[in-house]
Amino acid sequence: MALTPVQVSAETGAPAGPVAGSVPDYLGRRVPELDGLRGLAIALVLMVHYGANQLHPKPGTILNYVREGFSFGWCGVDLFFVLSGFLIGGILIENRASPNFFKTFYVRRVCRIFPLYYAWLLVTLLLLALRLPDHVHNLVQPALPFWSYFTYTQNVLSLKLGDFGPEWFGPTWSLAIEEQFYLLFPLLVRFCSPRRLPGWLVVLVFSATMFRVLAYFFTPHPGFASYLLLPCRWDSLLLGALTAWLVRRPGFVEGVKQNESFLFWVGGVILATLFGLRLARQGGLLSLSNALLGFLLLAILFCGLLLLALFSRKKWIKAIFTNRWLCKLGCVSYCVYLIHQPVAFLCHNLIWHQSPIISGVPKLMTTVLALGTTLGLALLSWRFFESKCVNWGRKFAY
Image 1 (cartoon, rainbow, N blue to C red):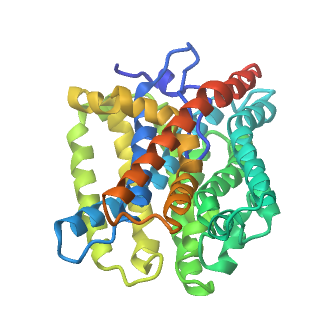
Image 2: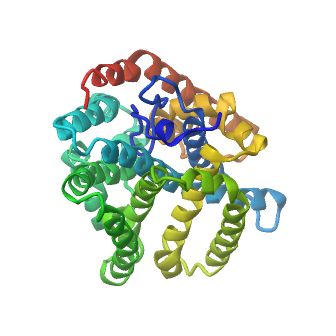
């Protein structure tokens, strides 16, 4: 399906960060390519957490090279950021003059994000109240004040720890970044003139590199702050929003369709550069080379992928991003993202009394069990809980 700028400007029940359900436009039609992109994003995240982090093969073996390939799945979070910026940016840009601008936006965001997230926190409190074995209790016990998770400030407080805390809360740092973005970005769109908005977006995009370099040199854990703080990561979100602005400019979409090969060439150059930065990595969570270029190039790459998915004339590209199973995975990606690590750690700890490590067929099957459990719970959550909340939020109109 060739999408028009109007279809791309869809109102949506998505995403929570990372993540969310299907995306209908104003006419009630779905945009399956966006579901497919979210499916790709969560598949990348699952590759690193259910693959790279659980495999410990000997160096030089084929399995070790597979593990190295899976380790690139961490960039799935950056794809989620670009998608969030694109979808939220499009909604806000189109409705900036609405008298219900703030009310409708925040009610719909709350209905999409809060119910599942706070239900998960309540489940955590319930588990903490039970007499769990120590090896399970340690997975649930937060290393940060519990109020930081309720206020979406865990990414800031994590800087004191220098790590992500217990695996139970591991994925929530990116949700905190998105929530902080949702608080600030509507103010920029509402009070900045449409003529000046793209200029400000460009300035802010490049400011993220400056913030990352400062964080790299002037924070206790080099590279960690540049990964967790909103100003250091908003280039992906804002590039997504800038892409949303561009597709609403006359002639831009047609230009993309006529110059697909250019996007492929740019993507190839960026991939080669990112591979070089990977080889230049100097240790720690992030290297200075990533702080300077890595995240920005990755965001540009995913914006190009987004444009190809939506507007490409090549049937094989459309076939990939409208694949039925990939789109289904995208629909339940929010819940999958939130619970996939806790489910994996619970399964392995309850069965083997240790963290997830694939060291044989039985433990491989435990990981498969965790994956099936995660997907099943996510499907039930979307069908019977999340979708109901989203539909209620859509009663509020701009």
